[in-house]
Image (tube, rainbow, N blue to C red; front, top):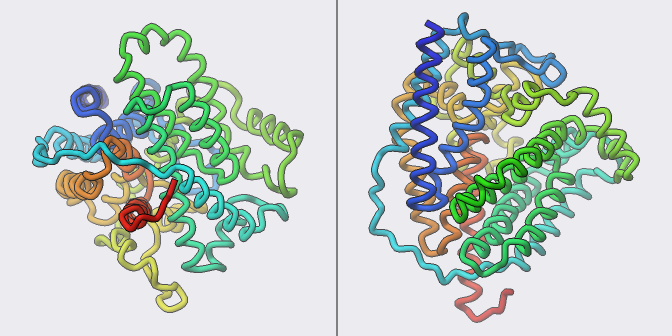
Length: 431
């Protein structure tokens, strides 16, 4: 049975890879490319290791205190079948023809990058000072306490900062793709920005998304050169990937004594290397955040307190203070952590759908993704090539992150874009 499951996984991998490349080269970056890459990276790297070794190992250093455990393929036949069916449902959506071919994108959009950067700076300053990071302590606990104590204002600022962050990265990528900015100048702007953001927020996902944006865009523009550069690129990707992977061990103690010095950073770096020494299997498990797949299997095996769509209501309810509604729906990562232990556990789109609707989620996913795809594209159709870049961003984020959080980030992004449109139409100058 394990051989049959492995064969089905391999077929799905090939179908996903084909549709991702077909969409990329025929239509450019878009929501479907983001979803495709998300499944290939976050599901199939861990699944490949499980097929090869027979076991998907859990990092005990990171998640030993949770009830999540290793996944042994031969002992998880039913759960593997469920995962295959969920992935197949996503493939059905990806292969469905677009109904929106009549939409013509307007390429006259001019992003206001300087103003985006100013808004990002003040938003980050508010969060950084308000959370007391300069006074020392664990970055995660400080931020969590800050958001709890400052309520809706802190949450609004956080969503705005994430929206602006995506706008900055997408705008720079858009200018490069549209040949309004040279590639090297683009790299000199975007790379320091995403590393700066990772350093001060502890969040690696935006650096990851940016790296994939650059890689896929460059591959589309120059496929032959990219293939020729592969021997040079692979070692660079491995070194960068290893650093990003172990950064989860660095970020905790980084601000423990206040603003970190170089010595503090190196101490945290060496500690991270001891916790996760260079090793191919550990590297692949780390960069793909394989624990997400362990969590999915645990959800398939044991979760039966179904939520019936509660986590998808957050975009409509987030503004209500928890002091007024104590049982307001939580984020799916918090619910999973409460059930399995830990502070936050990522379920991906597949796990969230299962926790809400059980196996009926398999039938819901194609229609759900098609609706979200249309919603994203329709609302971005007047913003030129940047629509595809932002669409890719949200395809990848919606697969990996809590759905409600990313939809709220998208809504705030739209409000920013439309707010700037209003200002420009009323002859205010925004550069």
